[in-house]
Image 1 (tube, rainbow, N blue to C red):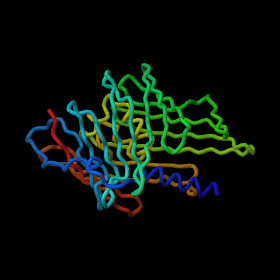
Image 2: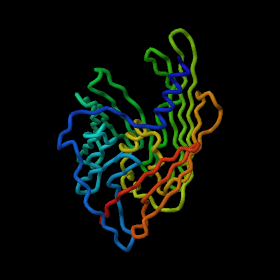
Image 3: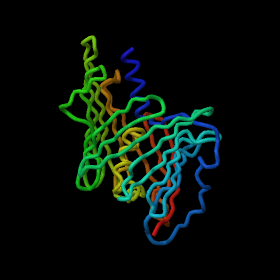
Length: 292
């Protein structure tokens, strides 16, 4: 049972979409994307929406200052499976994210509340599913990049005793490694160790996600919680290879993803991406807007 659960968890973690939704409401849908301008010179760009081979997978709405207003994720036939709404304080920092999970008949919310203290951020996680709350500590570097989650020397009791942490390593403003560590002791005394390791390679082309994530560690924290497989979006350049290892998968082989990027000749921004893993291929198309 443990092996099946851990293998299932690893697959979900890596494929990374949360799938629940509610009745279609106009206010829950993003505006229809306008035709994209393609100026001759490289300017600032923001992602508008992303398509895979079958559907729109993400759509972004912005405030007048170009901060994230909403992210719509996982387009179903007539609804978005997840909607993330961002709220900001007077200091312009994101104070709260409300995630609406839609399952077609009903919807429930997950609430991410943020407390800032210099290089540390406390995440208080609550939801409509339970009256309990959870707290997590995040550490930032001097570029407002998340570099550490949890604690190496704090034992949590839930009632399982566990030590849990994640560390992220950057090079030239690109996320190079992400390591996840979980050690637990069950009430019956049985011990478990779970580790995940990602490593990334990049080209030298600018990513239009840089402006989205820059100075918004709350958005990075959201992706750490619900979009682990997309952590490379934190980076200044575009990914060309991703390797993944999980000590709980029965095989000791490292899973390798080869990424081929195609760029728009006018905007010089990423236009298409081909991801290949063990003969399986997924294609993505990216739509951007120009910002001044």
